Image (cartoon, rainbow over all chains, first blue to last red; front, side, top):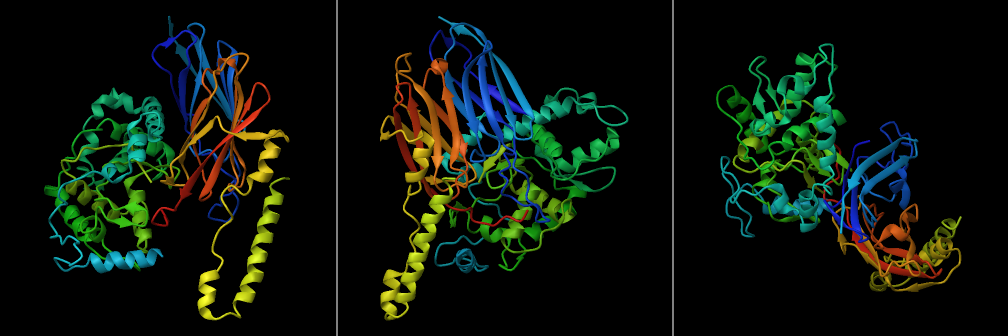
Length: 106
Length: 264
Length: 165
């Protein structure tokens, strides 16, 4: 799954900073029909988890009410420089992951 | 409701010059003055969405395109990079499309060129019109020309295509009996429902359209315009579309390419 | 399912209106125009049943939560929404979760986020799909178990052309 993640170049120790992620995903609602009149099966990214050096710091449950090619911005803090990992999974079980280093300065 | 709005546009944007309600009369060869790209007609929220590289969903196609650029395909096991090197070599390329393919004499838009490369030079299975990989590669290549002015050629072999494209641009079609010119030359800046009519340049393509919930080509947008005036859409790849794209590119000459755009 | 009950309510309203219009057809023409039922259900009328389900019966107070959304959406397929909850985000006083609800969408919970102490700021931005003009409601659950809410009304229109491409 194509995704793009942005965090600030450097963050201050313990100060909230924003994480922005855009994921290429159709977020199929399950309410649409194909040209033959068959329902297109629902398939949305339902869970997104942010872990910092392995510790869960944020979790979101998404649904078909989130626009296609979902975009999320949320805030976390970091006690020290480390690795932020975002992982997500859709109804079909397809998972995605992006890892981005975070540089902390005092 | 929409029919009533369209009828009003029709009445006010007629073929005669100097209508009382202020619609601009336009000579067939003239271009809108001042020339303004599509994003100028977007509300500030969508302009901001287009300008932000993370909020612009079109950039996801650019990102996918950057991966595909490196991917070896076909019996010759070549990637785009194998022949073209770094994608920066594509800078300026998109501003020169549509163009006539010297070998075949056919008019190609950017997508058609990519399709041709894939089959003839990469010896790989063809990409379908409007397929995701084709949109991704198109977005990636067009993105390299972001900010550069359109510079298509309409001389020589391109001339007959250009003439036919210009003719088609001014041709009334569909149940609503409207030409491109009536909206995009005579009525740009005016409201059609909640939309402000643009000058119809197509410099923001491939585009992310909220209505499509995805990215699409200029050809798709032309088809949807035809559908909008209740005219029959030509199939993908039809010369009618490509000629029109060439005319639009000429008409937009000098305007900066702004792909990937964000539109409603 | 709680979603059934709002539909029952709406059917009652529609039936009441239909009954009313049968009576109205006996009135002189001028009277009909003035009283023709055209209003949709009031904004946010579905939340009376959705909110208790979301909070599992806990009471909710309006406040501390701001929902930033455009008054007029460019397109219902993608509407930017930002939810901000006033909170110091301290160990003894922080936001546990943020829930965005819609009483007009087919699925009422648009997004739910769980914030930990590492969340830093109780703020979430995303883009949502809106099934027509509606009132969005955001709920915040605090570390002391209290619930707070904020809302925003969004008008959603279709784009000008029906797209057959």
